[in-house]
Amino acid sequence: MFADIVGYTKLMQSDEQNAKALRDRQRSVIESCLLKYRGQVAQYYGDGTLIMFGSALDAVKCARDIQIELTKEPSVPIRIGIHTGDIVYDDEGIYGDAVNVASRIQACGSNGSVMISGNVFDEIKNHPGIRVESLGVQTLKNVSTPVNLYSLVYKNPELVDNHKTQQNSTLEEETDDDPDKKDLGSLKRGVSDMFRTSYRTHIELSAIADNKSNIMISINGIIISIMIASVASQISTNSWLMLPTALLLITCLLSLIYSVLAARPRVSNEKVTLSDVRSNKSNILFFGNFYSMDRDDYVTGLEELMSDNTRLYTTMARDLHGLGVVLSKKFKLLRVAYNIFMIGLVVSVCSFLIVYLLL
Image (cartoon, rainbow, N blue to C red; front, top):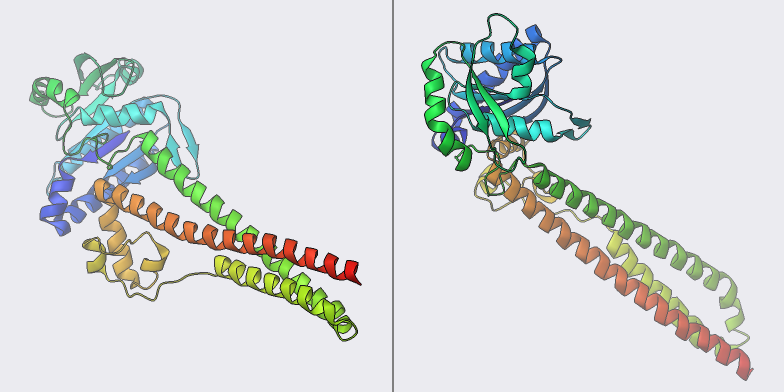
């Protein structure tokens, strides 16, 4: 079951406090109804809620009770979509075609609607007390197979007439709260996978850079220690060893310095405020920015970010760019360290060979 507040984005722009109050009331009502019908919140998407149930009948009854409760003052305008199907569930979230279809189905409704698919209807059609109105076979956006849509009649049969008159334009045109509109505020699985893969790639590349830096630090440290302990005592008896020894020590020292610079943690000293985050001057997802914020401001900033899908994905894109800049600096310093080590080692070895051949 996917539940979403109608017009939440516009409401956040005009009255943030009221929008947060409506969102909190929606979640409170949903959670209280879930206890009765054995449902479980799988994930929150700002003003959207994704819920799992053990049976289609429980999901439909829960949706009915939620809508009835939210029509009471202070009323919360939400629309609900229900679908059955296989899902994939892990620590990072819940995925699958059933999730996508459920979000599409709820987008076809309007304020106060409970939209169900043909799969759900087949499960509940023989249960008394459940009345639905068929909306026919509909082609949902980005869903290859047409879906039978039904509207649950729980209070006012005239509500179905509104669905019928609005369905053609709603299914084909994007609305303000369409979870799959063309901007970055999309809830498509592809967008989520893209960001997840990008973040994982950054983490893996950063780990590779740190490992390579640690290897260079260890190797150069060992070489410097050996050179000081063993070769230094021979320089007094053979002055020709001074030049190759100095070359090797300088090479290892420079390579060591650049490797340490590549692995050294970087933390910004810039003081970031909540107003900076709201004006997009600072990125609240970037550690170098948010660690200096007050805890309450940080929580408020995150809540505001999660309530605006467009701003959320834009901020994530900026965060990825910032991580890429830091990663680029790491690899540039590491490349210099490896080049110095490679060239200096070759020159030093050749110098030692020349010295030993002349002697």
